[in-house]
Length: 356
Image (cartoon, one colour):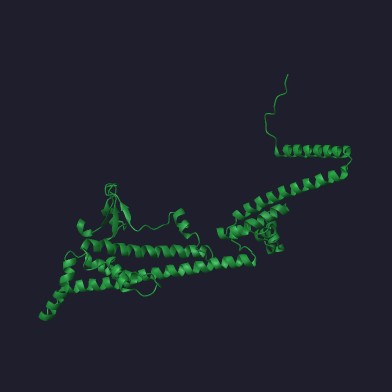
């Protein structure tokens, strides 16, 4: 009758015992072979033992490295600091995870209140969990501290640039809202002919002494449009050239544009300005939570579904736009994407006057 194979795998203890047994047999055979060849069997055994110790030390080092990396991944600190910690020597990593000043009598007395049968390993776990919950600052070397400071400096610069953009948009909002009010009047007209005849109307009013409201509103709209042109250039990028000014003028509201295009443009500019205010608040919160670091902000927004949309997408077959207005989810003059026909999305304006 044949001998059956073992059905269950070896446990770690059994495997280690098997390896140790094979190593002992190997050393004995090596020693015997050295003796038969006339060599020094004791020197041969010593060399094998040294090699075995080096292998065991290497295995232990790999296990410690894996444990330390796992402990670093659990820390409540930015990912940049975790990456830096993993580059440090093991001794510095351990000191950073378990700062010596935390292992003082007061913390140990605090620990004793939670465990009547303390052990060294349990006490270390207690310190580690306390540090992670409290967000203790990691102790690093000078080079790592300089790197973290440079990240904070970049984060501060990023916040300042974002604030400049948001400030420019905030300054534009009152003018854009005024232009939007003018456009919401059914009697207010814009277009190529309106722009061409405005100087003649102004001259006629001046000669006759009349003061037509239509002309004054068109002049106001033109002034509001002109105000936006130089402010379309990014802050701090220098003066606006005539060429750039002409390009910006074609990209903003204007008396020579059709009324519908002006409605879409002014709504988009208002919604963009409001979106930039929301992004600034989100970035400032991220900046404070990450101790002056804004690296990874965009990923944070996408991963947490926090990216504020510029336009709403509305399917009029499934949503009642009147109910959306009553609940404050859409405003008079707001631009939105009409998704009633998914194959033919259309950017359009919600006009309250269309429903009155």
